[in-house]
Length: 168
Ligand code: SF4
Ligand code: SF4
Image (spheres, rainbow, N blue to C red):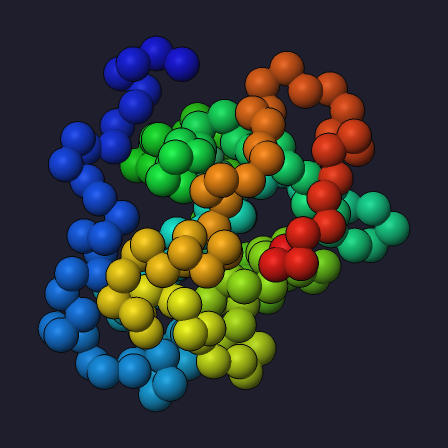
C-alpha cells in the first residue's frame, strides 16, 4: 500500500471518540431505537472491535468467519486505514446501516453493539459506552488485537482460514 493511502491522522486515537460522553444523553441506547439515534450516538455504538473487517464465506446459508482480514485494516488498533475512502477502494466494504444489521444470515459478530441492541440485548459490560474506555474492548478479549490474523492479500482459498471463535 502506498503511504498516502494511510489516512488515519497521526494524533487520532480510538479513545478520542469516547472522551466526551458527558455531552451525550446518558444511556441513550436504552431509550432510543437504532432508527431514532442521531449520527453521534450511532457512531458511539461501534466498539471498534474490527471483527466486521474479517473476510467471510456463506456456506449452506450460514456465515463462516475467517481469520483473514481486509488489507486496509490496521490490526494494531483495529482501525480502517482508509476510512473516508473505504467504499471507493473496497467495493465489498459494507456500510453499517439498518439493512446491514438486519441482513440474514447474520454477518456481523454476535458482540456487535448494533446487532445486540437491534435484537433486544443490552450492551456488554466491556463496551466503551459503559466503561468510558476504548481499551476495555481489547482488555475483555473482544477485539481483533492479539489474535492470529492473516492479511487477505494473496489468499486464494478462504475455506482454509475458517475460524469458530466464540465471539463471532
Ligand atoms: S463489528 Fe460492530 S462494533 Fe465491531 S467494529 Fe464492526 S460495526 Fe463496530
Ligand atoms: S475498507 Fe472496509 S473492510 Fe476494509 S478495513 Fe476499512 S472498514 Fe474494514
